[in-house]
Length: 148
Image (tube, rainbow, N blue to C red):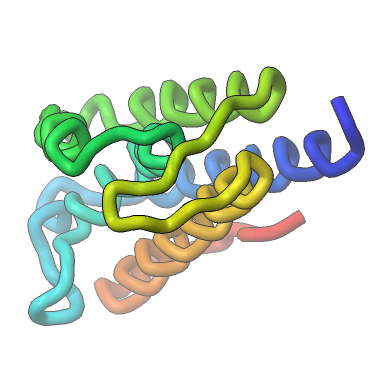
């Protein structure tokens, strides 16, 4: 594995680990709350985090809008969110290590595999920050280092 792949794997791994720690903090009464009106619920953000590494790379390899709608429609029960995030990370790691061919997205964006791997990492950190902010708004006390 090249140096950039090793670094990306480590940083995405940190993002996944810390996301799982945040998800494990969520109390039953808070899953359906929308700390910011009109935005996703805590549950919706957590599920999005759980699948986005895989979703981004499916899109990168040419999944259609219909295929992605079917993918996102697969329910993720609360007690399986952390496991689903692990599965998504494994999907990401496999493509990071073996490479993959990309195709333009169904909305016309084209990028190479390195660009998509970076985009997925940034996407993960963006929504991890959103979940962190939500938990802060809900009054959670968190002693968590988000970066190494």
